[in-house]
Amino acid sequence: MSEYDVTPDETDAGVEDEYTTEDESLGGLPGVTVEETFDLDGDGYADSTITADGVTYIDSDGDGQADGVAVDYDGDGVSDELLVDMDGDGSFETAVYDTDGDGVADTFESDTDGDGVVDQVSYDTDGDGYVNQVVTDTNGDGYADVVATDYDGDGLVDEIEIDSDGDGASDTTLIDSDGDGFLDTVYTETTPQGDSFQSQTGQVI
Image (cartoon, rainbow, N blue to C red):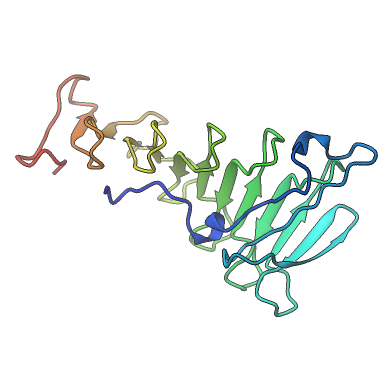
C-alpha cells in the first residue's frame, strides 16, 4: 500500500446522511418527508440534533455543544453544507458540501493546521462516496502545490503532481504505473514525458 493512500481522514469518514425515502430527489415536495441523520464520530449511532429554520446543530459526543452545523439553503430538507468541529476548539476545521445535490457529500474543505484558512480540499469526483482527489496547499501561500489523484477508485494514489515553485504548473509528477500501490515513476520539468528515474526496486528514490 502506498504511503499516500487516498482515504478521507476521521473527520470526514464519519459524515453520513441517511434518508427515510428511497428517492432523495423528492425532498421538498408536498407529502414527502426527508429525514437526515448524522454520525460525525463514526460510532454507528445517530448523533443528537436540533433543527430550526433550515439549520441543524449536531452534538456527536453528548456534551451539549454542537460539533457540527448543517445548513439547508434551498429548503428541500437535505443539507447543502456541513461544518464540522471535531476537536472541540470552537473552530470549524472542515466544511462538507454536496455540490451536485444528489444527497452525497462530494467536497471536503479542511483547515489542517488550525490557522483559520482552508489548506486542503478533498473531492469525490465520480459520486461513489469515496474521495479520489486531494488538493493541498503545503506552504500556506494560498495556492495548491500538491494534487494526489486516485483514477481507478481502488483507494490508492495513482498520481501525485507537485508544483514546487508556485508557478501554477506541476514540475514533478509521481506515478504508480503498474497499479501495485507504489509510486514507481517520476517525471520532472527537466525530464521529458516518457523518461523517468527509478530505483533498482522500481520505487521512486
